[in-house]
Image (cartoon, rainbow, N blue to C red; front, side, top):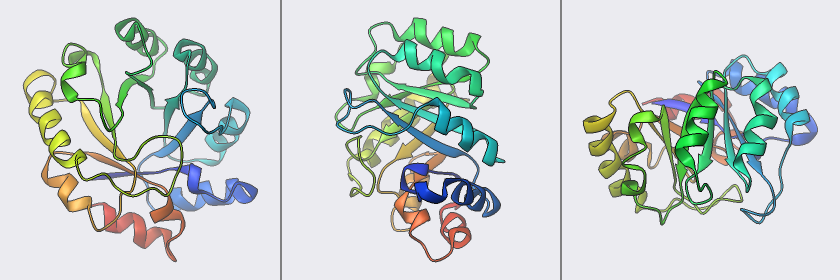
Length: 213
């Protein structure tokens, strides 16, 4: 299991310190939540702050857009060369076009599904994706409780992935801890995003290691 700590739960007064700490602690990706205050009821960070995160990080960035006007934000963050840019299928009218645009910029495209959105909604896009991110909380805020229905949903997506695009990774974000990570692994999840669990743990290294099952 790969681990992508979410900097949403970091101490923003000591952001460089915390980003370096999770990279030194053995994380695989640095997950960056970009919220615009419209698609979700919260406002987080823009490219100036993410540029500082990129400079501090020794691991690739995983940028998760929770925004309206996805194309605008893709163009805003693409110069930072993250490993992944993911966008919500619920917001995008022309997902295939946006997938192609992200890939043309040298970045791996990913789609995000909110808790209520079925995996079948992206069946005809799956073969063009590098990753699918399943939300296991309602997007917008950190520290929420894990929604159990993501387990059978991930299993359905895993079956579809194996059939249509075995190279596509499955990521889960929200309420992930050592209490549910094995359940996620058993249904085919490849990457977990963990914010408060990692940043509030007495040892970031121990927290990350406990998820790398």
